[in-house]
Length: 372
Image 1 (cartoon, rainbow, N blue to C red):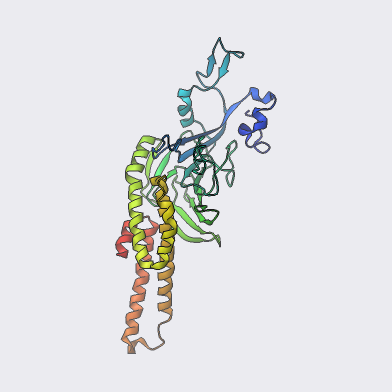
Image 2 (tube, rainbow, N blue to C red; image 1 turned 90 degrees about the vertical axis):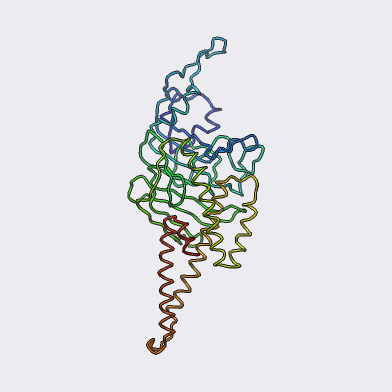
């Protein structure tokens, strides 16, 4: 009902006491209060992996339930002879043109090892047959439903009216985003059990419709260990052309991301030595699972690459700082080696800054070239 209370009964549409309860007078004025629809962008849905959704929209608004062709009369049916339902052939059209007050965008990056909410044939593989759900945390949207996966699921939120769904590709994090979203987050963890690894936050600071700031949050301190601030990136708009989006993502963006990730990880491993090999061995069982999709593989490689790059920065920024501070107090004019060491350490600091700038832009090819 349009008159339902978001504060008293926020999940009215999914409440058992409502749909099994008595008749309510307010049901005489019902509305399409929430629409949730999902996409199998990677095209991997099959009998073995049914309803393989990774991208979804959650839309809310008090829209009257009135659409052409929704009355269906069957004389042989028990009373009531006429039922009311949007024609199946019109459902996508209704969703695509729904005048939403708020829009939530979800991308399922990976499963939550702590949950078992998947298809009955494989409950540990967390893909719901109802599609990709929104969340009941941070930005609350009524009638979202559940159960909800929060870890390894990217959320993006647009708090302004929109009568169409539009997405774009960002070359900074090499991901698909909701155009118009001003904020987003991705809780990282529960890959192996209940471990919490951190969080990635996204913001549109100049409100031009595109994310321009990414914060990589440390799990222990809550502080950003890395910030990428990139305005005027060469984003690629797709509007709601889902076929073009899927073709680009599966044939261009995703293969390139995996290739660059693997190449950069190898370069970083060679710089870090044994410590990196131990981390790689922890990720190996997940990466070697037969059922993971290329999109899920990319996510795991992203995390591995990001952690290795963090270790790389700690190692070489720390080494450079130590060298520049610990130069002997001898007058450099009388010791040519001091001048040479000082110059080399400073040049490394400059190279690290250039490498950092390329990494921040998502230009991993340039980073690889610099490391080589």
